[in-house]
Image 1 (cartoon, one colour):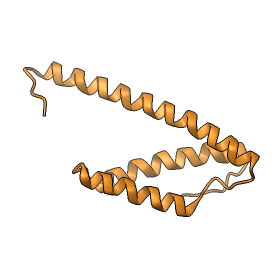
Image 2: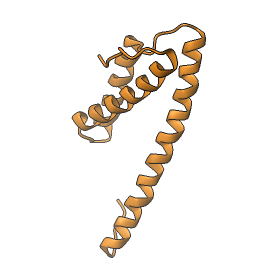
Image 3: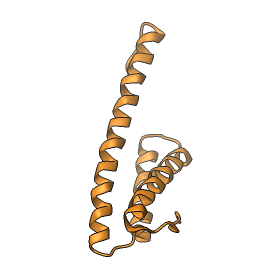
Image 4: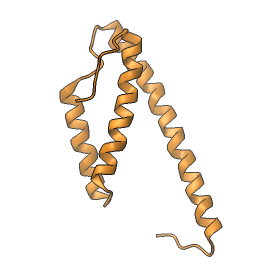
Length: 100
């Protein structure tokens, strides 16, 4: 773990990491946009329950490996997944999709 001489240095590193997180979310949703278009063209429903279950299990396993709070990770991924489903549903004009 990195050590800091002052609070400002630590906050600066947090700001850099936060920007990277937002950049990755932007990149992720650009891919989600492509996936939504693919699903629309191939008549695939936005929600794939088995895939979602598998992904959530994987995320929670990683959370455990990283000593992160599993409920926090679950909440974050549920929110990200809901936003992705909302985007895909808009492409398919399906407004009634819900998270499992």
